Length: 107
Image 1 (cartoon, one colour):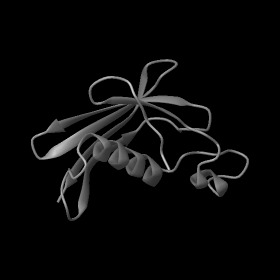
Image 2: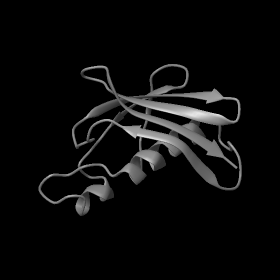
Image 3: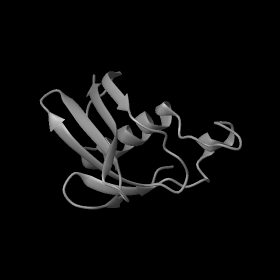
Image 4: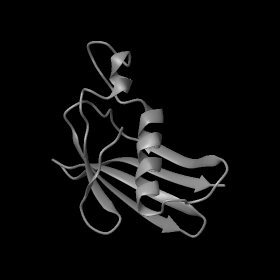
């Protein structure tokens, strides 16, 4: 569902398109990417870097979304492994403004 373009080690570009199914009802007339979609895209990105980060459950240790993510935005993602968890950051590519910070633990 999410298509990433590699942009360097542990980095990718992602264009938020209005065809993502999340926008259908979230919110009509003023679409916003829901936080669960941000988490899902971040996990997909991590799995593209490390196909099996761990089996079992997922824990979101920290989540900061500083502004709405809307169709048409171009996003730069970066992930790094921190011992037992991953840190994923999203920047709006046009302004290089950080808009998401997630710390995710698998297992």
